[in-house]
Image (tube, rainbow, N blue to C red; front, side, top):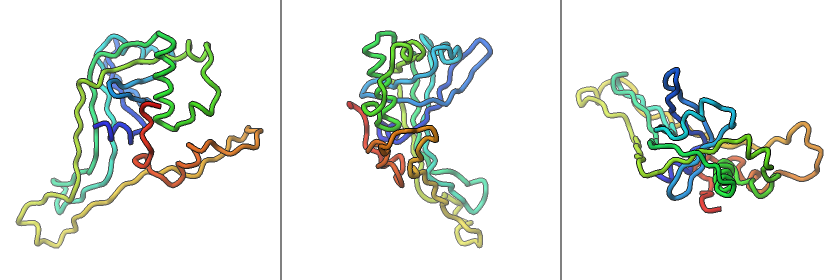
Length: 201
């Protein structure tokens, strides 16, 4: 389960609002016991999740499974579902800890960037969610067809899907002469699965 979370980049967070349920795509981070989410403090929709039950899902699509009949078409995937009560983090030390985990989970540049200011922290809402109620589901392999269809003329197989990072592109308004941080430069040509886990940094 933790390996699936480590390889992911985006979590879909389900919250209940006065106008009905809503799913938000968000960056996230984790330690051994909790999942951390963040957004703008002014984001009312995310704020409704504080103190409430929420659901977080992370999914990797690894392949399209093409069967001999569309009835048996499927997908190869890895997914994690985490449910529980989200708690708002207001303590500055724990907030910085959570934001570092979130940042370094995506790309480890917390130590090579400007640290968050007090204004940044006030503008940021951070939620934590226990990993106690979490489950993983994985599907791999070929299509599963009816025995009587195996000898038929219809094609069957898997179309693999992969994601990779490209070479970093410098910002148009960058005036320095340094290259990207090592943690960024090393991403080129790699997939999210190849990233070293950032937990505990």
